[in-house]
Length: 181
Image 1 (spheres, rainbow, N blue to C red):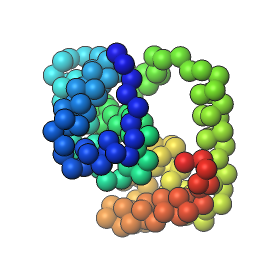
Image 2 (cartoon, helix red, strand yellow; image 1 turned 60 degrees about the vertical axis):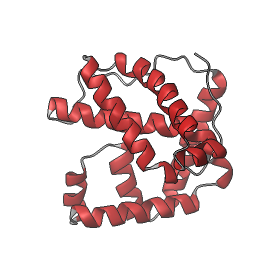
Image 3 (cartoon, rainbow, N blue to C red; image 1 turned 135 degrees about the vertical axis):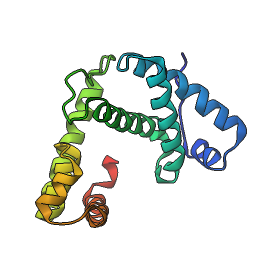
């Protein structure tokens, strides 16, 4: 399989629902998702369900893509999120005993260094935030605490939690170094 290099123009055409770009999107990511999901899901029906959900959410959130070069990572992160939801539904708990999220690919030294540097940058940025913002982001995205539990901890309902998360993300973005994006 040949890997495709994405750009802002590709994302723009996909936003406009250009037929050739959409066909490429479904074909290209259909194959990649199939490879990824075969290792994680038991049935072809489950694979198809998750794949379709990834496609729908990707197209729904396409306007959030700020850098077209990172489109592949964007789709991958949506896939990971949909998979986590799938496992929660399947196991009816937050424990993923049957699941291994280890990637099958080997990482180069450069990728490892970039990953470590990104982790350090994220932690430095989190340290600059107000405690409430930092705690909310860490609970939801690093510790993967259930939203209902976060609501109980902060004494807010789910609707207001969305507002707090949005604000915390905005504060995080404003402190995150532009060269690290």
